[in-house]
Each structure stands twice: as structure tokens, then as C-alpha cells.
Amino acid sequence: MTEMLNVQDAKTRLSEILSRVERGEEFILARGGKPIATLRPVEPAPRRELGFAPGPPLPESFWEPMTEEELAEWGA
Image 1 (cartoon, rainbow, N blue to C red):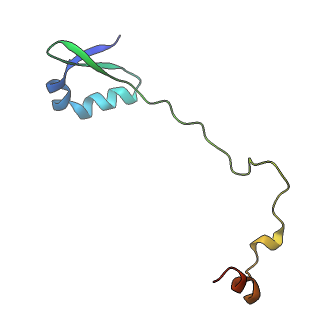
Image 2 (image 1 turned 135 degrees about the horizontal axis):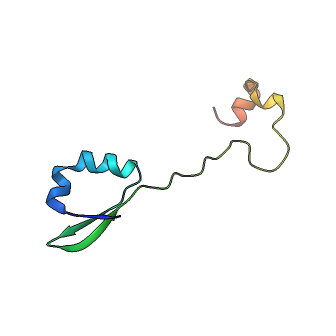
């Protein structure tokens, strides 16, 4: 069940309320008895794996230091 809280009460008990939100509870914040916002847990973003781009893997030479000539071409 969603609990309705007055904004002042929410400010006073913010740490407690956030702990309850982390456990999955939802709250409606109200000013003067009029609902103005919902406080609910955020859906975690899906974890992205590295190496998801299509194509062949990088050659081992990619990780080798650049030669002086290559650095000069890049303006380094």
C-alpha cells in the first residue's frame, strides 16, 4: 500500500523514508493534503557488457605503443 506523507514530515524523516523506498515501498508526497509527487524505487539500468559491437576483434598490434613516425602523424 502506498503511504501519503506531508512534505514537512518527509523532510523530517527523509533518511528513514529513503531506506523504506530502497526496500521497495512507495510514497506519495502531498502539500496541504494535495498529492504532488510520487517517491518510488528507481529501476536499475541493465548492465552492459563490453565487446558488444559487431565486427572482428582488435588485432594484438593495436595495444602496442606507437612508433615515433605514427605519433608524428597524429601530431603528438
